[in-house]
Structure formats: C-alpha cells, structure tokens
Image (cartoon, helix red, strand yellow):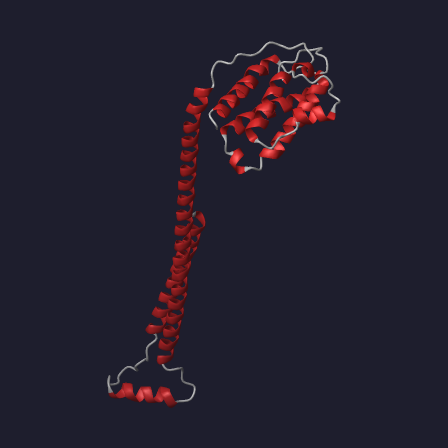
Length: 270
C-alpha cells in the first residue's frame, strides 16, 4: 500500500476509534437512566402507578424510552459512518493495488526493452566485427581532385551533373558518393581546388541523405547506416573547420573503417 493509502487508513481508524468511544459513553449514560422507585412501595403495583404518574403528571421528566431512542439513532449514525469509512478504505486499497500492479508492469516492460536492446546489439556486433578488417588508411593526396576523376572543367554544368548528381539508384549513388568521399578524406594541405571540391562533396552528401533517408527499404540496410555515419563524420569536419582544411589524421582511421564497411555491405547486397 502506498504512502497516501496508509495515511488515509490511519485517519479512518482514528475517526472510527473516537466515534466508538463517544458512542459507548452515550450508550452507557442513556441506559443508566432508569425510572426511580420510591422507598417503601411494592415493586409491582407501585411501579405501575408511578409509571402512570410520570406519563400524565405535570412537570414530570421525559419517559426513559426517550434515552433509548436517542441511543438507537446515534448507533445508526455511527454504523452509517463506519460503513462510509469502510467503503473509503476499500477504495484506497483498490487504488493502491492498481498502482502497484501498474508499477510492476512498467518495470517488466523496461526489463523486456532492455533485453531486446541487448539482444539486438549482440546480434549486430558479430556481423560488424566480421566486416571490420584492419584499416588501410590511404596516403595524402596533393593532386587536383577534379583531375583524379577526369573532370577537366569543374564549371561545366553537364559534366558536373553527370559526375555528382544522384541517379536515384541506391547502389550506384552510394558507390559514387563513396568514391568522392574517399578523395576528400585524403586531400592534403595546399591541394589545388580542395575548397571547391569539398564544397561540392558536401552538397552531394546532402543530396544522398535527402533522397534515401525517407525510403524504408533503404534505411533498413546496413550499408546505409555505415555510410550515414561516415557522412556525419566528414560533414562535422566541414562545419567545424571549413572546406579548405584537410580532414584530421586522428579521425581518418575511423572514417575509412566506415567507408570500407559500407563497400563490403554493398558487395553482399546489404
């Protein structure tokens, strides 16, 4: 039983106890008032005469039956109050039991959720560990990234569209973005067109996320989650340091681990 229920029960018991004491006192007083019998009279005949006198004589007190009526009324009132208190206690007990049952159900649901989460993590961890091979971090690049992909004029809108726009085919678009992100993660300080390239890759990453994050069949794929993490890693660098600064060496191992994992998931059709 909760704290409120215990407090209500204690108050109710106190009220019933005080009422009972008062009722017993009233009952003792009422029943102790008898009809006085004068000394020197016979018990039977004179008692009848005295009763007649008390019933018709002027200035006489109320008959003894009035005390019994008052006592009975008080007794009925006390019983009604006790019944109300009993109903209140029963309601408090039911409420406390319902709250206790709800708490038990919430605790059980929390335990089931925790077990389900642990099971899911346990199921995914071996698969991720199996795909996560030792990372071979590529060397830094000093060459113009547009020349690396064979795009001689970055200002050519047709060539830009052909190289960077989404084709709305998940596998092809993901491989395309992977290729460009790998170059961004390896550009060295002072590389020609590095700032322009990184700005373009940031736009391409935004296009990829905007296109596929609302497609349930894609979002459920493991390659999506791993590349999404890599996108966040590179985008946070662009936001914090800008597109003209190289991706930091201390984060490259994790970045290329996500890139390699995505490629392996794509090979497996995941």
